[in-house]
Image (cartoon, rainbow, N blue to C red; front, side, top):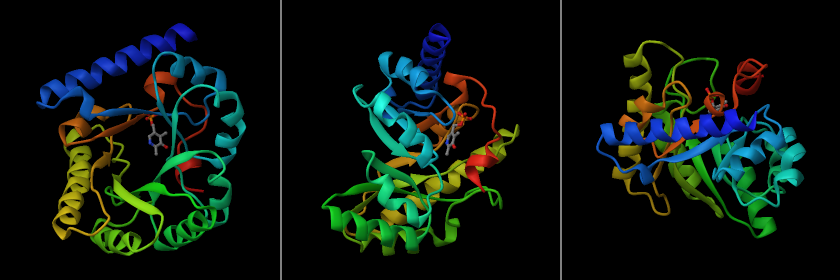
Length: 241
Ligand SMILES: *Cc1c(COP(=O)(O)O)cnc(C)c1O
């Protein structure tokens, strides 16, 4: 098991390097985030031991269950799953520095209130639904700018970029369109020059499509399967309940 995780990590890093080279980007521009849903703390620890630094869960229960076991190993936690407003308080207990799945104003408002109360700040990425699929969370691309404007007014949350889950398709052009849409939203928000908003991160690309995402400007690729192997649960369990 250890060996395969190490080999897989190595392989992913070389895929990222190649993709960066192919699009004239520097490897350091793209961060590897490990999507650790369903993966045991032991196996995550192997990846952290091999130099991975950025991990993310989709569910609070899992974050909580693995938190103590991983605490002593240096790493950064992002959160990439759908979050109910009544879970915000709990999220704040586990050193999550960035919520990548901010998709509605109500969530941002409640998050902001709680952060103020606790004297904390958090980075957020706005999750955009670029694939027009009912089965995915995220604000519609046409409404993303308005959401960013509104979130920017809230204290203690910092908008740092955008996140999307691309279409699952073997047709590269269709996947590519999703990532181009996210980039177009990024441009739009940048042009609006909203105070306090930094459009630096584009979190897009997963095990199957990270090359396409990197070609379109991804700064964070989120990889699960290609490092830890196939999962038992269907992703719908995590993406929509
Ligand atoms: C599971 C998950 C990933 C990683 O998907 P893989 O195909 O296993 O690499 C990325 N982003 C989100 C939001 C996920 O839930």
